[in-house]
Image (cartoon, rainbow, N blue to C red; front, side, top):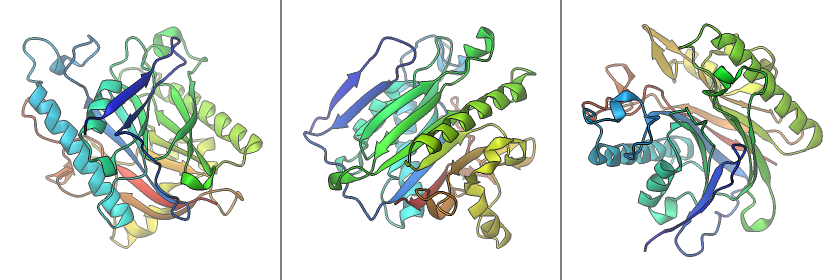
Length: 334
């Protein structure tokens, strides 16, 4: 059956694009004692085939090898990746309940992706954060549960030169209660300043960290809603300051790594594995309405791995997935 797409567009930069993809009426999944799965993934320069002018040079112009056929294959590979991660988290072939993506060009990519999914596995609720005029891509949140509210936070303490290329901090409130009433969780989706392109990268990331800590602290103070902050932070754990007061997915990972169960990073750079993608959360042990993580997964298997490192996408050959590896958690909330 044909799926209808409803898009709400607001006029200011502080508005995101939110749409619901459905086949007639979509009911949220029944609450499963509030055990949920979440995945974070930098999908690496995921452009569509419509030239808007902000694409990377390999994806536009008459000499580009980018094509509709390659785009469709990338969409299918993204679907495969979500199924694989969902299987690792839930031990069954099902996509994660919540997916946080980075380096997505725009809402068209998300619409095309959702339209190709089987109805039983589709994401009825999608939030695409607004991209700056000069930005090539943005972040997105896909959810099987209703998105109740969202906020887009820009960084006001940097010059207009840097602000024009920084991704905003996205705050999303999701109701996981199904038909049993409200059971909210708050997700902060991030994609921080890259280490490339400016000598001020670390200073900007410090400002982005201060912004995120302030938003999380305010949320905890004024609300009992559990909180997760995840995405591509472009720095390893030791580079954080106040974010280290919160629990992080790698806490669950260290024992697994020591025992040989897990391998060692999400990004490979100059011969070294780096952990620059993170899932931070307020632990149930320190906050009455916190999160209890039952399982953490770093997807470090073929075909996402090629010759021992991430199988990054190559637009010329049409081969590969991403230069990052996805991470995910299975967790419970009160």
